[in-house]
Length: 249
Image: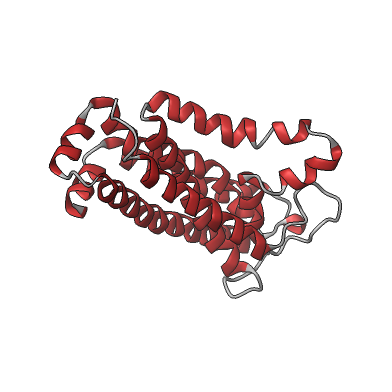
């Protein structure tokens, strides 16, 4: 089953393009940041800001991995061949997770080393061994991996590519980027700190000084990883629970 899903994953161009775009965005933004930032203001963790763009490609890929089969009707053939639907979804999600994690970490490390070289030529020197840097790089890669799995969850639930991608952007950027700012003050901070974007910010830059009172900044690094792990578990488990209770469309 894993072999079959592996062939499916790499036989479509969208997989290659999504992974390329994610890696290129992270490395390109790291390079751009390193060339334009004023040396006194340069921080190596900020060079990982490309994760905010890389997550878009990972999220879309997560949707496409499962929604394409539903949209084309090929999922019926898959389920007819392997009646244990949960096994199919588990194989898809497990393989996707492994690929996203590997590529995400590779892109994060490549972005870091790109910034290290370019900033080094401008007199800003740092290394992977500096305090907080390993956690920053690993956090960036793990965060965009989670976003990809969230896209997979939406693709499995909605089964329609357009609807799933639209929902993905709506939740990540509108629901979690704009809506919290419209909430009453007493709720705003608590909600903001639990949004995907804020969690990713903390995970990829744990060395950033906390600013008491600033929306979302109170979440500790450990808490951010914990919440991300919880979200990831939900994104993986929900499709497994739903797949046996819904007909393919």
